[in-house]
Image (cartoon, rainbow, N blue to C red; front, side, top):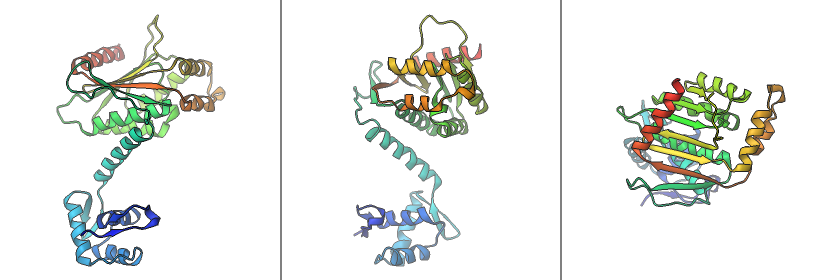
Length: 290
């Protein structure tokens, strides 16, 4: 029977010996078998043998959860990245999208898609990024490594500056080329262009006059198409914020924070269609290069 420990310092649920080993290595690493055994017996009062700890450590290393070097163990960074992506997905699905409503799951039928309902634009941005990064992390050598965006403004850099920086550089690290076709032509849009280009993206401000105001943000990658429409009231506030900012000294950053955190109902649509996705990619990339 596996050793189980309940320690209120780390939550009330029971933890197995491998769980406790990971908790120890989260605080200090790399450690030997003896050092981990000593902490288990001392700090956690666990009745566990050296041999049991050694067996668990090598089992975790075999599963590539742990990395071993010179008889010392630490948690694999690749394992941590996978857990980070999984936890973000849990939070997106179980917390930020509790009002989620799903249509039939994709089954290779063109008309089927999935919708999610979010309460704020910040929640949408977080979920959007997680979907794209999950695709990027699982790319094969022969896959199409292009991500394209089309929308009215790239406010993501104002809402999640650090996260957007990481997003662009993680895509670049995985061989992805990003294309952004943006309708906004204001001072902040031009500033955003510098940010995205500095971080490796192809960024084009659409100068052609369009009789229809674009209220949809769309991303296309692989055979995936993701998009959402801005609620009318939020879109009006967003346009006012961008058009009224004539200089950085007049920038009211609290205004954009209020807009991005404002409670509303935003339908996020996720679909898969290789033919449509390829066509959209070619059209948007062609406009980016003109």
